[in-house]
Length: 317
Image 1 (spheres, helix red, strand yellow):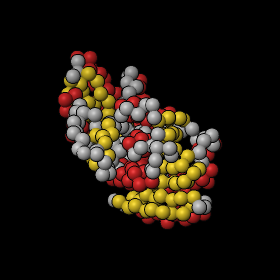
Image 2 (tube, helix red, strand yellow):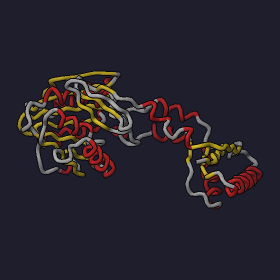
Image 3 (tube, helix red, strand yellow):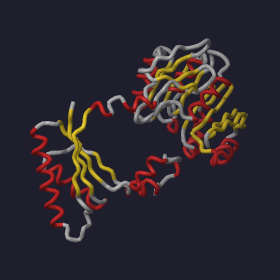
Image 4 (tube, helix red, strand yellow):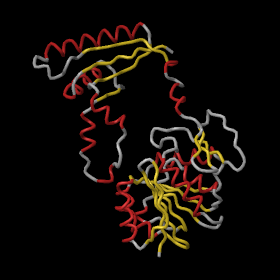
């Protein structure tokens, strides 16, 4: 399918004015790029809001504010673009002080084929432990002796499952799951990848918990895709409000500050061997988490580090 991509360059102050013009012309769906939003992101109110910002997000701070919209390539679209140009030019005439920037419009004819499958080139099968391979559904991978494949497609919310923090959690699950009678709690289950990995490691009593309904949906889809629907239970819940059950092993791939905040509740949900595995921790915040683990009556038994991140295993003493 052919379509027009229309981009309007403005300033942070002009985003609202240009948006209003588009909505008055009947366009309610468009994409806004505004680097000043990165500054708002940096001014977080709580330490646990984020722990790491990618280079791509930081680079977007220097992008000229703009609004982009798309429309199917037909005669009506040509007339619509002319109408947008006329309205933006009138706004530019009224903007004597130039607070709305250059208000320049660029349009181009594009095709779905330009990027429909292009992004898939960046996602290939990845070995995250000796026996576990993460593989997107469109890729074919022939499992070798002893290997298990987890089929997970990259998602906007939960990524590809190949991040160092996920890999280290899987390595620790492989080490600490001893038999199929142990119960596993995947706290903040996200895509469900750690629950699936626990099942591959032999666990039969697995529960994934998240406060986000989107995570619940994603987990259930991935668990079904990998053939574990009968062995993993996914529930929407909040550990700070009590979950009504305890587990031999709790795994949590969260941010350092959130792990620290949740630790007293984690301890209340441990039983039996009482193993806690956590990751999502920047190496520079390792001491912060270790101190909190000690303060809550657990003893650190393992620390793994990779690419500036760390994972910690601890046991209730």
